[in-house]
Length: 127
Image (cartoon, rainbow, N blue to C red; front, side, top):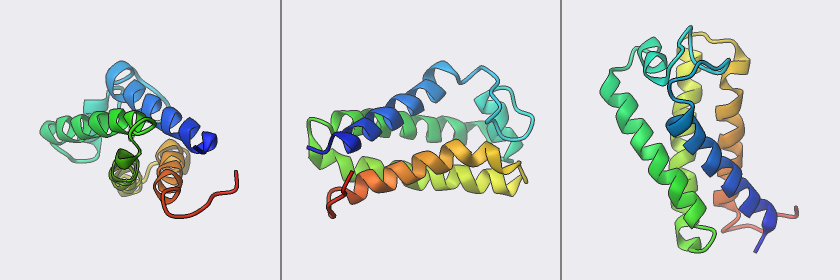
């Protein structure tokens, strides 16, 4: 077991759960546009509310699966790849509305981490 990968699974999983379940109605400097809530953020991207709920539900499920994958490794790659795909969408939305680069940093960082988590099933990582 690679403890760096496990740590990344915990960091990504808990962070996504925090964003969608605890911080969803609180303003942060990372929100797209001038949004103060996650629903306002999706509206700033030009997306309807139902997309926010669909993306949020999917991200929460995948984050939980990524944590569970610590004990059930068969879940690691699909949950990490699913999150990586959604995180690419987050980055694209920040670019779509011409947000400053720093606002897409968390999504980019978690995208890289998810990519490494998924790749760890296929290649030997030396950290």
